Length: 444
Ligand code: FE
Image 1 (cartoon, rainbow, N blue to C red):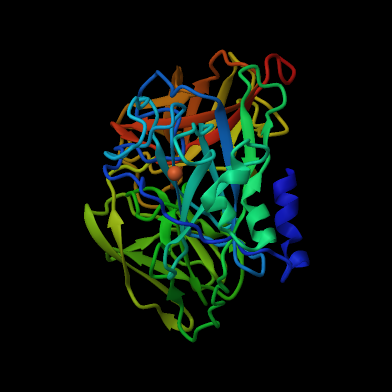
Image 2 (cartoon, rainbow, N blue to C red):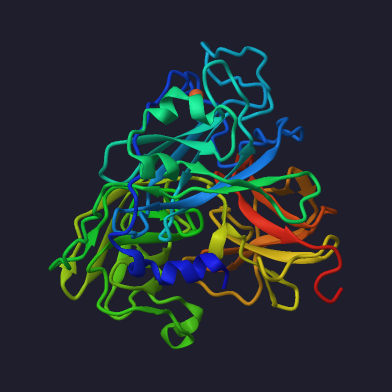
Protein backbone atom coordinates (compact mmCIF):
# COMPACT_ATOMS: atom_id res chain seq x y z
CA UNK A 1 0.00 0.00 0.00
CA UNK A 2 1.29 3.45 -0.89
CA UNK A 3 1.74 6.34 1.47
CA UNK A 4 -1.60 7.74 0.43
CA UNK A 5 -3.41 4.65 1.62
CA UNK A 6 -1.62 4.79 4.93
CA UNK A 7 -2.48 8.45 5.26
CA UNK A 8 -6.17 7.75 4.78
CA UNK A 9 -6.14 5.36 7.70
CA UNK A 10 -4.85 7.94 10.17
CA UNK A 11 -7.02 10.79 8.99
CA UNK A 12 -8.85 11.01 12.31
CA UNK A 13 -5.57 11.88 14.00
CA UNK A 14 -5.45 15.42 12.71
CA UNK A 15 -9.09 16.35 13.21
CA UNK A 16 -9.59 20.05 14.04
CA UNK A 17 -6.03 20.82 12.92
CA UNK A 18 -6.61 21.80 9.32
CA UNK A 19 -6.24 25.27 7.83
CA UNK A 20 -9.25 26.17 5.73
CA UNK A 21 -8.38 26.84 2.10
CA UNK A 22 -9.05 30.53 1.41
CA UNK A 23 -11.70 31.52 -1.10
CA UNK A 24 -10.28 33.55 -4.00
CA UNK A 25 -11.76 35.30 -7.00
CA UNK A 26 -13.08 33.30 -9.95
CA UNK A 27 -11.22 35.72 -12.21
CA UNK A 28 -12.36 36.81 -15.64
CA UNK A 29 -11.21 33.76 -17.63
CA UNK A 30 -13.36 30.80 -16.59
CA UNK A 31 -13.85 29.27 -20.06
CA UNK A 32 -16.60 31.05 -21.96
CA UNK A 33 -16.60 28.20 -24.43
CA UNK A 34 -15.99 24.80 -22.86
CA UNK A 35 -13.61 22.41 -24.59
CA UNK A 36 -15.37 19.26 -25.82
CA UNK A 37 -12.79 17.29 -23.88
CA UNK A 38 -13.11 18.00 -20.17
CA UNK A 39 -11.29 15.08 -18.59
CA UNK A 40 -8.47 15.25 -16.07
CA UNK A 41 -5.71 15.04 -18.65
CA UNK A 42 -5.28 18.60 -19.95
CA UNK A 43 -2.17 17.64 -21.89
CA UNK A 44 -3.97 15.61 -24.53
CA UNK A 45 -7.03 16.91 -26.32
CA UNK A 46 -9.46 14.22 -27.47
CA UNK A 47 -7.62 11.61 -29.52
CA UNK A 48 -4.96 14.10 -30.56
CA UNK A 49 -1.48 12.65 -30.64
CA UNK A 50 0.16 16.06 -30.30
CA UNK A 51 0.36 17.01 -26.64
CA UNK A 52 0.26 20.55 -25.33
CA UNK A 53 3.53 22.47 -25.15
CA UNK A 54 5.00 23.11 -21.72
CA UNK A 55 6.39 21.53 -18.58
CA UNK A 56 4.26 18.48 -17.84
CA UNK A 57 2.86 18.84 -14.33
CA UNK A 58 0.82 16.48 -12.19
CA UNK A 59 -1.47 18.12 -9.66
CA UNK A 60 -3.04 15.87 -7.07
CA UNK A 61 -4.49 16.11 -3.60
CA UNK A 62 -7.64 15.58 -1.66
CA UNK A 63 -10.83 17.44 -0.94
CA UNK A 64 -11.31 17.46 2.82
CA UNK A 65 -13.85 18.71 5.31
CA UNK A 66 -12.64 20.99 8.10
CA UNK A 67 -12.30 17.94 10.35
CA UNK A 68 -10.13 16.16 7.79
CA UNK A 69 -12.64 13.68 6.39
CA UNK A 70 -12.41 13.12 2.64
CA UNK A 71 -15.26 14.63 0.66
CA UNK A 72 -16.67 12.11 -1.80
CA UNK A 73 -18.56 13.15 -4.91
CA UNK A 74 -16.95 16.61 -5.08
CA UNK A 75 -16.63 18.01 -8.60
CA UNK A 76 -13.14 19.50 -8.93
CA UNK A 77 -12.66 21.89 -11.87
CA UNK A 78 -9.39 23.50 -12.86
CA UNK A 79 -8.64 26.03 -15.58
CA UNK A 80 -5.41 27.81 -16.33
CA UNK A 81 -3.27 29.60 -18.85
CA UNK A 82 -1.23 27.53 -21.30
CA UNK A 83 2.54 27.78 -21.70
CA UNK A 84 2.10 31.10 -23.52
CA UNK A 85 -0.18 32.58 -20.85
CA UNK A 86 -3.38 32.18 -22.91
CA UNK A 87 -6.76 31.02 -21.59
CA UNK A 88 -9.64 29.36 -23.40
CA UNK A 89 -11.55 32.61 -23.26
CA UNK A 90 -12.55 35.12 -25.91
CA UNK A 91 -11.09 37.92 -23.75
CA UNK A 92 -7.81 36.15 -22.97
CA UNK A 93 -5.09 38.81 -22.58
CA UNK A 94 -2.67 36.56 -24.49
CA UNK A 95 -3.88 35.51 -27.94
CA UNK A 96 -1.44 32.90 -29.31
CA UNK A 97 -3.21 30.00 -27.65
CA UNK A 98 -1.78 26.47 -27.79
CA UNK A 99 -4.69 24.71 -29.51
CA UNK A 100 -3.45 21.34 -28.25
CA UNK A 101 -3.93 22.40 -24.63
CA UNK A 102 -7.25 21.53 -23.01
CA UNK A 103 -7.12 24.53 -20.65
CA UNK A 104 -9.87 23.15 -18.40
CA UNK A 105 -10.49 19.82 -16.72
CA UNK A 106 -12.73 18.18 -14.20
CA UNK A 107 -12.57 15.30 -11.76
CA UNK A 108 -15.18 13.76 -9.48
CA UNK A 109 -13.73 12.55 -6.18
CA UNK A 110 -14.25 9.04 -4.91
CA UNK A 111 -14.55 7.87 -1.32
CA UNK A 112 -10.94 8.86 -0.54
CA UNK A 113 -11.63 12.44 -1.64
CA UNK A 114 -8.59 12.32 -3.96
CA UNK A 115 -8.24 14.06 -7.31
CA UNK A 116 -5.60 14.02 -10.04
CA UNK A 117 -4.83 16.19 -13.07
CA UNK A 118 -2.09 16.15 -15.67
CA UNK A 119 -1.44 19.55 -17.15
CA UNK A 120 1.38 21.95 -17.99
CA UNK A 121 3.00 24.53 -15.76
CA UNK A 122 0.83 27.63 -16.23
CA UNK A 123 2.35 30.46 -18.27
CA UNK A 124 2.53 34.08 -17.24
CA UNK A 125 0.17 36.78 -18.43
CA UNK A 126 0.26 40.47 -17.55
CA UNK A 127 -0.58 41.35 -13.97
CA UNK A 128 -0.44 37.93 -12.36
CA UNK A 129 2.01 35.39 -11.00
CA UNK A 130 1.68 31.78 -12.23
CA UNK A 131 -1.49 30.16 -10.88
CA UNK A 132 -4.10 27.47 -11.48
CA UNK A 133 -7.78 28.21 -10.84
CA UNK A 134 -9.80 25.69 -8.84
CA UNK A 135 -13.54 25.34 -8.29
CA UNK A 136 -14.80 22.61 -5.96
CA UNK A 137 -18.46 21.72 -5.70
CA UNK A 138 -19.15 19.31 -2.86
CA UNK A 139 -22.55 17.57 -2.77
CA UNK A 140 -25.21 19.95 -1.52
CA UNK A 141 -22.74 22.86 -1.23
CA UNK A 142 -22.25 26.03 -3.26
CA UNK A 143 -19.26 26.15 -5.59
CA UNK A 144 -16.04 26.97 -3.74
CA UNK A 145 -13.47 28.90 -5.79
CA UNK A 146 -9.76 29.29 -5.12
CA UNK A 147 -6.35 29.41 -6.83
CA UNK A 148 -3.13 27.40 -6.50
CA UNK A 149 0.38 28.88 -6.74
CA UNK A 150 3.94 27.67 -7.25
CA UNK A 151 6.42 28.05 -4.42
CA UNK A 152 9.42 30.23 -5.26
CA UNK A 153 7.87 32.13 -8.19
CA UNK A 154 9.30 35.61 -8.67
CA UNK A 155 5.96 37.38 -8.89
CA UNK A 156 4.28 35.70 -5.90
CA UNK A 157 5.26 38.60 -3.64
CA UNK A 158 3.58 41.21 -5.80
CA UNK A 159 0.49 39.28 -6.90
CA UNK A 160 -2.60 41.19 -5.82
CA UNK A 161 -4.87 38.15 -5.53
CA UNK A 162 -2.35 36.16 -3.50
CA UNK A 163 -1.49 39.14 -1.27
CA UNK A 164 -5.19 39.73 -0.82
CA UNK A 165 -5.40 36.60 1.37
CA UNK A 166 -5.00 38.30 4.73
CA UNK A 167 -4.56 35.23 6.92
CA UNK A 168 -0.90 34.16 6.66
CA UNK A 169 -1.54 30.45 7.27
CA UNK A 170 -4.29 30.41 4.67
CA UNK A 171 -2.09 32.32 2.20
CA UNK A 172 0.73 29.82 2.75
CA UNK A 173 -1.64 26.90 2.21
CA UNK A 174 -2.22 27.77 -1.46
CA UNK A 175 1.48 28.12 -2.34
CA UNK A 176 3.00 24.65 -2.73
CA UNK A 177 6.24 23.23 -4.13
CA UNK A 178 6.09 21.88 -7.69
CA UNK A 179 8.80 19.25 -7.32
CA UNK A 180 10.71 17.48 -10.06
CA UNK A 181 9.43 13.94 -10.57
CA UNK A 182 12.20 11.46 -9.74
CA UNK A 183 13.67 9.88 -12.83
CA UNK A 184 11.57 11.83 -15.32
CA UNK A 185 13.65 12.44 -18.43
CA UNK A 186 11.30 15.15 -19.63
CA UNK A 187 11.45 17.16 -16.41
CA UNK A 188 7.93 16.58 -15.16
CA UNK A 189 6.74 18.32 -12.01
CA UNK A 190 4.35 17.18 -9.30
CA UNK A 191 2.37 19.31 -6.87
CA UNK A 192 0.22 18.22 -3.93
CA UNK A 193 -2.65 20.49 -2.97
CA UNK A 194 -5.38 19.56 -0.50
CA UNK A 195 -8.48 21.74 -0.52
CA UNK A 196 -9.99 22.04 2.94
CA UNK A 197 -13.62 23.14 2.80
CA UNK A 198 -15.36 24.77 5.73
CA UNK A 199 -18.04 22.13 5.65
CA UNK A 200 -18.99 19.48 8.12
CA UNK A 201 -20.40 16.67 6.02
CA UNK A 202 -23.72 15.75 7.57
CA UNK A 203 -23.27 12.20 8.74
CA UNK A 204 -26.71 10.94 7.93
CA UNK A 205 -28.26 9.21 10.88
CA UNK A 206 -29.00 5.59 10.13
CA UNK A 207 -32.44 5.90 8.61
CA UNK A 208 -35.30 3.61 9.39
CA UNK A 209 -35.54 2.87 5.71
CA UNK A 210 -32.54 2.76 3.40
CA UNK A 211 -31.76 6.12 1.76
CA UNK A 212 -29.91 6.69 -1.51
CA UNK A 213 -27.83 9.87 -1.70
CA UNK A 214 -29.83 11.67 -4.34
CA UNK A 215 -27.09 13.83 -5.86
CA UNK A 216 -24.38 11.79 -7.54
CA UNK A 217 -25.24 8.80 -5.34
CA UNK A 218 -25.47 6.33 -8.24
CA UNK A 219 -22.14 6.13 -10.05
CA UNK A 220 -19.81 3.96 -12.09
CA UNK A 221 -17.92 1.72 -9.65
CA UNK A 222 -14.75 2.53 -11.61
CA UNK A 223 -14.88 6.28 -12.20
CA UNK A 224 -17.48 7.49 -9.67
CA UNK A 225 -19.09 9.40 -12.53
CA UNK A 226 -22.89 9.42 -12.19
CA UNK A 227 -25.05 7.23 -14.37
CA UNK A 228 -25.32 3.56 -15.24
CA UNK A 229 -24.27 1.58 -18.29
CA UNK A 230 -26.26 -1.62 -18.98
CA UNK A 231 -24.17 -4.58 -17.82
CA UNK A 232 -21.73 -2.35 -15.94
CA UNK A 233 -20.75 -2.37 -12.30
CA UNK A 234 -22.19 0.52 -10.33
CA UNK A 235 -21.93 1.86 -6.81
CA UNK A 236 -24.91 3.18 -4.88
CA UNK A 237 -24.10 5.46 -1.94
CA UNK A 238 -26.54 6.07 0.87
CA UNK A 239 -27.38 5.35 4.49
CA UNK A 240 -28.89 2.31 6.12
CA UNK A 241 -28.42 0.34 2.92
CA UNK A 242 -27.38 -2.86 4.71
CA UNK A 243 -26.82 -4.06 8.27
CA UNK A 244 -23.46 -5.72 7.57
CA UNK A 245 -20.55 -5.49 5.17
CA UNK A 246 -19.48 -8.20 2.75
CA UNK A 247 -18.83 -9.27 -0.84
CA UNK A 248 -20.79 -11.98 -2.57
CA UNK A 249 -19.16 -15.42 -2.41
CA UNK A 250 -19.48 -18.65 -4.36
CA UNK A 251 -21.97 -19.86 -1.74
CA UNK A 252 -24.36 -17.07 -2.80
CA UNK A 253 -24.23 -18.01 -6.48
CA UNK A 254 -26.60 -20.84 -7.37
CA UNK A 255 -26.60 -22.17 -10.97
CA UNK A 256 -23.77 -19.77 -11.87
CA UNK A 257 -26.06 -16.83 -11.13
CA UNK A 258 -25.04 -13.91 -8.97
CA UNK A 259 -27.44 -13.38 -6.08
CA UNK A 260 -30.34 -10.96 -6.60
CA UNK A 261 -30.55 -10.62 -2.79
CA UNK A 262 -27.57 -10.59 -0.44
CA UNK A 263 -28.37 -10.81 3.30
CA UNK A 264 -31.80 -9.39 2.57
CA UNK A 265 -30.52 -6.48 0.46
CA UNK A 266 -31.84 -6.13 -3.09
CA UNK A 267 -31.70 -3.38 -5.72
CA UNK A 268 -34.09 -2.55 -8.53
CA UNK A 269 -32.97 -0.52 -11.55
CA UNK A 270 -35.57 0.44 -14.12
CA UNK A 271 -37.90 -2.22 -12.72
CA UNK A 272 -35.31 -5.01 -13.02
CA UNK A 273 -33.47 -6.82 -10.22
CA UNK A 274 -29.75 -5.98 -10.19
CA UNK A 275 -27.28 -8.71 -9.13
CA UNK A 276 -25.69 -7.72 -5.81
CA UNK A 277 -21.88 -7.78 -5.61
CA UNK A 278 -21.15 -5.99 -2.32
CA UNK A 279 -23.15 -4.61 0.59
CA UNK A 280 -22.35 -2.25 3.45
CA UNK A 281 -24.35 0.34 5.40
CA UNK A 282 -23.25 3.23 3.16
CA UNK A 283 -22.36 1.57 -0.12
CA UNK A 284 -23.81 -1.20 -2.28
CA UNK A 285 -22.29 -2.43 -5.56
CA UNK A 286 -24.44 -4.10 -8.17
CA UNK A 287 -24.35 -5.07 -11.81
CA UNK A 288 -26.72 -2.91 -13.84
CA UNK A 289 -28.96 -5.31 -15.79
CA UNK A 290 -27.57 -5.66 -19.35
CA UNK A 291 -31.07 -5.26 -20.84
CA UNK A 292 -31.79 -1.79 -19.38
CA UNK A 293 -33.33 0.59 -21.88
CA UNK A 294 -31.70 3.92 -22.70
CA UNK A 295 -33.01 7.05 -21.01
CA UNK A 296 -33.68 7.29 -17.30
CA UNK A 297 -34.12 4.55 -14.74
CA UNK A 298 -35.46 4.63 -11.19
CA UNK A 299 -33.23 2.99 -8.56
CA UNK A 300 -34.43 1.63 -5.22
CA UNK A 301 -32.71 -0.34 -2.46
CA UNK A 302 -34.76 -2.74 -0.38
CA UNK A 303 -33.82 -4.41 2.91
CA UNK A 304 -35.51 -5.71 6.06
CA UNK A 305 -36.25 -2.09 7.10
CA UNK A 306 -38.16 -1.27 3.94
CA UNK A 307 -37.63 0.24 0.50
CA UNK A 308 -35.81 3.49 -0.20
CA UNK A 309 -37.34 6.37 -2.10
CA UNK A 310 -36.61 5.97 -5.80
CA UNK A 311 -33.75 8.02 -7.25
CA UNK A 312 -33.50 8.58 -10.99
CA UNK A 313 -30.30 7.98 -12.87
CA UNK A 314 -29.24 8.25 -16.51
CA UNK A 315 -28.78 5.08 -18.52
CA UNK A 316 -25.75 5.65 -20.77
CA UNK A 317 -24.96 3.45 -23.76
CA UNK A 318 -21.24 3.51 -22.96
CA UNK A 319 -19.15 5.16 -20.22
CA UNK A 320 -15.85 3.30 -20.03
CA UNK A 321 -13.69 3.56 -16.93
CA UNK A 322 -10.75 1.72 -15.45
CA UNK A 323 -10.92 0.49 -11.88
CA UNK A 324 -8.20 2.08 -9.82
CA UNK A 325 -6.16 1.13 -6.83
CA UNK A 326 -4.72 3.67 -4.40
CA UNK A 327 -3.47 6.99 -5.79
CA UNK A 328 -5.38 6.61 -9.06
CA UNK A 329 -3.18 3.81 -10.46
CA UNK A 330 -5.05 1.56 -12.87
CA UNK A 331 -6.11 -1.83 -11.53
CA UNK A 332 -4.07 -4.26 -13.61
CA UNK A 333 -2.37 -7.64 -13.46
CA UNK A 334 0.14 -9.65 -15.44
CA UNK A 335 -1.01 -12.75 -17.30
CA UNK A 336 0.19 -14.80 -14.30
CA UNK A 337 -2.23 -12.87 -12.07
CA UNK A 338 0.39 -10.85 -10.17
CA UNK A 339 -0.64 -7.29 -9.53
CA UNK A 340 0.70 -4.19 -11.19
CA UNK A 341 0.78 -0.91 -9.30
CA UNK A 342 3.01 1.85 -8.01
CA UNK A 343 5.26 -0.73 -6.32
CA UNK A 344 5.18 -3.21 -9.22
CA UNK A 345 5.80 -1.55 -12.57
CA UNK A 346 4.75 -2.91 -15.93
CA UNK A 347 7.48 -3.46 -18.51
CA UNK A 348 7.31 -2.12 -22.07
CA UNK A 349 6.53 -5.02 -24.41
CA UNK A 350 4.75 -7.18 -21.86
CA UNK A 351 1.05 -8.05 -21.98
CA UNK A 352 -0.99 -6.81 -19.06
CA UNK A 353 -4.66 -7.09 -18.16
CA UNK A 354 -6.56 -3.91 -17.30
CA UNK A 355 -9.82 -3.99 -15.33
CA UNK A 356 -12.70 -1.67 -16.02
CA UNK A 357 -16.42 -1.30 -16.43
CA UNK A 358 -18.92 0.55 -18.61
CA UNK A 359 -17.55 -0.88 -21.86
CA UNK A 360 -21.03 -1.95 -22.96
CA UNK A 361 -22.48 -4.87 -24.92
CA UNK A 362 -20.77 -8.14 -25.76
CA UNK A 363 -21.20 -10.76 -28.47
CA UNK A 364 -22.94 -12.95 -27.48
CA UNK A 365 -24.97 -10.67 -25.19
CA UNK A 366 -24.37 -11.10 -21.45
CA UNK A 367 -27.28 -12.39 -19.38
CA UNK A 368 -28.05 -10.57 -16.12
CA UNK A 369 -25.84 -11.91 -13.33
CA UNK A 370 -24.61 -14.86 -15.37
CA UNK A 371 -21.16 -16.17 -14.47
CA UNK A 372 -19.47 -17.60 -17.56
CA UNK A 373 -16.40 -19.78 -17.89
CA UNK A 374 -15.11 -17.76 -20.83
CA UNK A 375 -15.01 -13.98 -21.11
CA UNK A 376 -17.48 -12.58 -23.65
CA UNK A 377 -15.84 -10.38 -26.32
CA UNK A 378 -16.89 -6.75 -26.61
CA UNK A 379 -19.22 -5.73 -29.42
CA UNK A 380 -17.45 -2.41 -30.03
CA UNK A 381 -13.80 -1.75 -30.77
CA UNK A 382 -11.58 -0.55 -27.93
CA UNK A 383 -8.61 1.78 -28.21
CA UNK A 384 -6.24 2.15 -25.26
CA UNK A 385 -3.75 4.99 -25.15
CA UNK A 386 -0.81 5.35 -22.81
CA UNK A 387 0.51 8.90 -22.85
CA UNK A 388 -1.29 9.25 -26.16
CA UNK A 389 0.42 6.22 -27.69
CA UNK A 390 -2.00 3.57 -28.93
CA UNK A 391 -1.37 0.22 -27.19
CA UNK A 392 -2.06 -3.01 -29.06
CA UNK A 393 -5.23 -4.63 -27.66
CA UNK A 394 -5.18 -8.43 -27.90
CA UNK A 395 -8.48 -9.05 -26.10
CA UNK A 396 -11.33 -7.00 -24.65
CA UNK A 397 -14.36 -8.54 -23.03
CA UNK A 398 -16.60 -9.14 -20.04
CA UNK A 399 -14.91 -11.48 -17.55
CA UNK A 400 -17.69 -11.62 -14.96
CA UNK A 401 -20.85 -9.60 -14.34
CA UNK A 402 -19.90 -5.91 -14.54
CA UNK A 403 -16.15 -6.59 -14.76
CA UNK A 404 -14.38 -6.06 -18.09
CA UNK A 405 -10.82 -7.09 -18.98
CA UNK A 406 -8.63 -5.50 -21.61
CA UNK A 407 -5.35 -7.13 -22.57
CA UNK A 408 -2.76 -4.73 -23.92
CA UNK A 409 0.88 -4.75 -24.85
CA UNK A 410 2.63 -2.01 -22.88
CA UNK A 411 4.07 0.50 -25.39
CA UNK A 412 7.71 1.45 -25.40
CA UNK A 413 7.76 4.26 -22.83
CA UNK A 414 10.29 5.87 -20.56
CA UNK A 415 10.33 4.65 -16.94
CA UNK A 416 7.79 6.41 -14.77
CA UNK A 417 4.09 7.26 -14.54
CA UNK A 418 1.91 7.56 -17.60
CA UNK A 419 -1.67 8.56 -18.27
CA UNK A 420 -3.78 5.64 -19.46
CA UNK A 421 -7.18 6.08 -21.09
CA UNK A 422 -9.50 4.11 -23.32
CA UNK A 423 -12.17 4.67 -25.90
CA UNK A 424 -14.94 2.23 -26.80
CA UNK A 425 -17.37 2.64 -29.66
CA UNK A 426 -16.14 6.20 -30.09
CA UNK A 427 -16.84 7.13 -26.44
CA UNK A 428 -13.81 8.33 -24.53
CA UNK A 429 -13.06 7.64 -20.90
CA UNK A 430 -13.83 10.72 -18.84
CA UNK A 431 -11.07 10.01 -16.35
CA UNK A 432 -7.52 8.87 -16.97
CA UNK A 433 -5.68 6.58 -14.60
CA UNK A 434 -1.95 6.08 -14.02
CA UNK A 435 0.26 3.25 -15.23
CA UNK A 436 3.80 2.98 -13.90
CA UNK A 437 6.33 1.38 -16.21
CA UNK A 438 9.95 0.35 -15.86
CA UNK A 439 12.02 -1.29 -18.56
CA UNK A 440 12.86 -4.90 -17.74
CA UNK A 441 10.61 -5.19 -14.68
CA UNK A 442 9.94 -7.36 -12.86
CA UNK A 443 11.57 -10.60 -13.90
CA UNK A 444 11.31 -10.22 -17.66
FE1 FE B 1 -6.02 33.57 -14.00
